[in-house]
Image 1: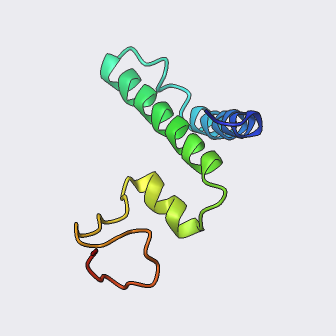
Image 2: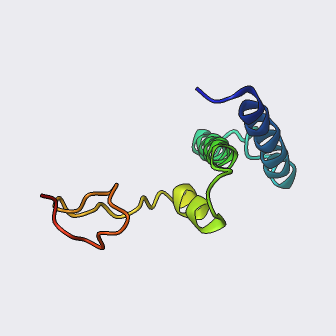
Length: 94
């Protein structure tokens, strides 16, 4: 579970991003077109996701945060590589 300060950061960042989004296009959430409203809600959900990722990854580099936000996880290691063996450079496990 996230620490209280991380939760506060999530809320603050989401509030800021959502406010900017709604200010830029206030008609989207009140549109008579259900598809337009659904896209606006999905955009807000994405902003909530980004807020959580950014708030929860303060220990990562900017590049690593970008990859998480974009949904590009680190490539999986081959089955014969031990991820805890920092000096192996891909040596097979024994």
